[in-house]
Length: 168
Image (cartoon, rainbow, N blue to C red; front, side, top):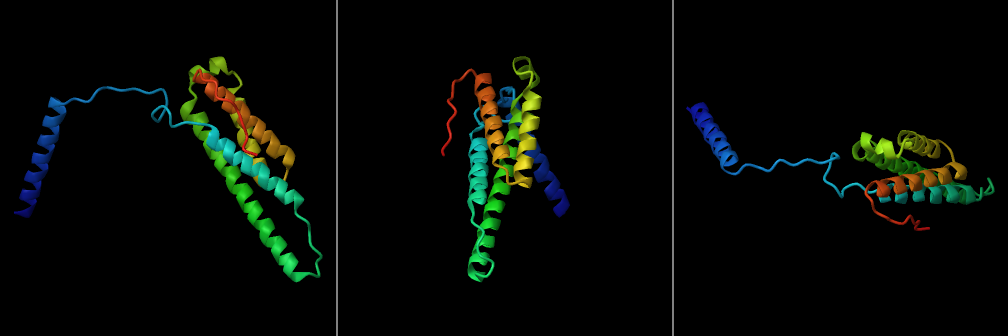
């Protein structure tokens, strides 16, 4: 008896939904990207890349303590490992944000205007990886330059002039 009641309720619900769809049809919409316009912005990649540069500088500036000063050595290792963790985390965030732009926002039509689009993103993703593997200010700065180039491509593709700036 319960199964029959559940079946009847299910049928009534489906009939109600079908009737609503027929009486109030939804408009057909389309988008050039996977999300609604306005959700994509390269600024999050810039912020994360800036953190990579900042942590790389901090790592390179750390003074190695005298090995006989146990407290200083422990503090050094703790600080070093925290900077590395942040650097690697932010490099991954940068990569994730860039890959979203590359795969979800940019479409084949953009290749006409930016023939080096794929190469630019591929190299930027590789710089994210290099920034995780190494403590290289050169690669961190190259990453920032790549993110700036992508920033300019992105806003140009939207016919907007959004200036590039860095927080630091």
